[in-house]
Structures are given as structure tokens and as C-alpha cells.
Image (cartoon, rainbow, N blue to C red; front, side, top):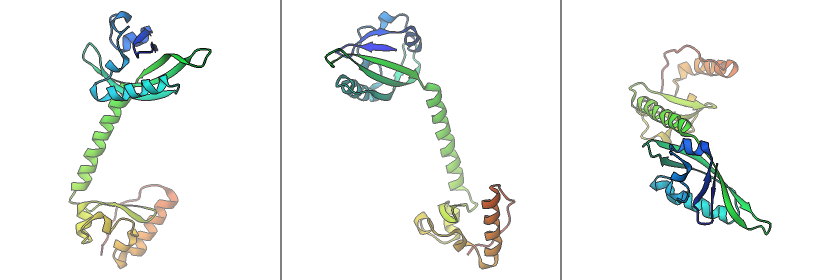
Length: 193
């Protein structure tokens, strides 16, 4: 928790804020500008929201900052305008929540998801994904198998359109089982058109 004056400078900060920012004491930040805290790409964002708060609106945003010990931390910031009896903003109350763990987990998840998608896309096995019996994704091998030049030639088409007529009834029964029971079923070999 912290407070900013009319110039956007820190005037107070609680012990938890001092600890999160790896500061020796409150005096290390008191008197410095809030928009000096974020890393360069987030400075304008912080400045914009501080200005909006001084106009009377509650604001919430995220910034990334580097602490004196060199670690990079992500914070969710909430700014609340404090108004005097005349309704004029005289200070800004701020709350910062360290969301670094969540951001790092999200980054790791995004990387893993991209790796998984790369594996699927480059797989020599034809992979088509459907939802409500319509194709929503097909990898390169699937497109080659059905002689399509792009995903747009197959996306949105009924999945059964790509199944050989000898297997349509079998595949339809399998799709019905999946819909009814919501569980995976064993793989089978199928012919495609």
C-alpha cells in the first residue's frame, strides 16, 4: 500500500511494499516518481493511469519492475483517488499485488503450449480436430492427406466429409459414444477420402 502526491511522487509506503520492492527502508522510495518504478515499456502505461486517477477514476493495471537486487517482478496495481470535502482529488492511494509467480507460470504454460502446437503441426501423423462434428484444426499432414492447400479449405466442414464411405457408420457411432459418455475411446484404423 502506498500514497502518491499531486506530482505522482511516493509520500508513504507500507512495510510489505518495502519488502516486495527489496528496499532497505521507505526513504529509498519516498520522494521518487511512481512512473520511475516500472521497466521502460510500462512507464507510459503507469503515467497514463496515474493521470486518469488524478482526474477522479479508479484504475487497475499491471507493470513489470526491476528491484535493486536485480530481480524482475510483476505487480497488479490498483489506484484509488482520495478526494477532499470539495470533491477534488488530493492524493492517490495505491495497492500493489505481486503477481510474479502467476505471470511466470503463465509464461511457462504459454511456452509449453507453443511447443505442443509445434509438435502437432510438424507431426507426420495426420491430425484433425473437430468440435460439434465440424473441423476446427488440421495439421499439415492432414491437409496433405485430404489434398487441401490451406486450413481454410477444411475448417468448418463436417468431419465425416473426410471419412471414407466404408467407415462413416463406424465413425458416427464412435462420435456418438464420445458425446454420450464424454470419455476417450480406443483408436482404430480408418480410411479417409
